[in-house]
Length: 177
Image 1 (spheres, rainbow, N blue to C red):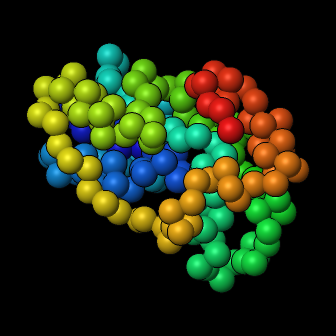
Image 2 (cartoon, helix red, strand yellow; image 1 turned 90 degrees about the horizontal axis):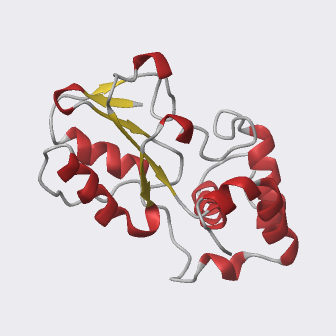
Image 3 (tube, rainbow, N blue to C red; image 1 turned 180 degrees about the vertical axis):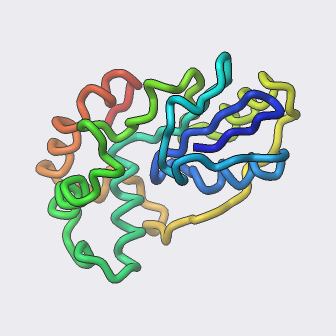
């Protein structure tokens, strides 16, 4: 969680949602305090009447991004096919999947920035708190997938696993496979 006290702005960073780029760009705007780590939240430290923004991304796309990131690391998940990787990642990373939610900090947010049109959402949020629009920096970009769409990496089993386990968030935010 990041607080920019000058404008009463808080940023909640969900994994694999361009959170590093968003945080770095916000850091260019002025004094910023990190509270509870990059992917943490402390509801008691959120200022009253703050604009609290959080980034989200299509859950199926999140997992492909994470899969590619972990493929380049020495981890227990290295080399697993996507349909095995996803449930193991969720089971072994409770800090990122709290109470069965991928976007566990959203109850504290009042402004959602979608990865799918992040620059436009980011600019709109900045203008709303008195900053001019600002280009997001490029950061933590994972090795990509030969410009393939995330859907091409899924088999039926993996697609359905994500749909069942994150159904509430998928429906609430209107995501589709």
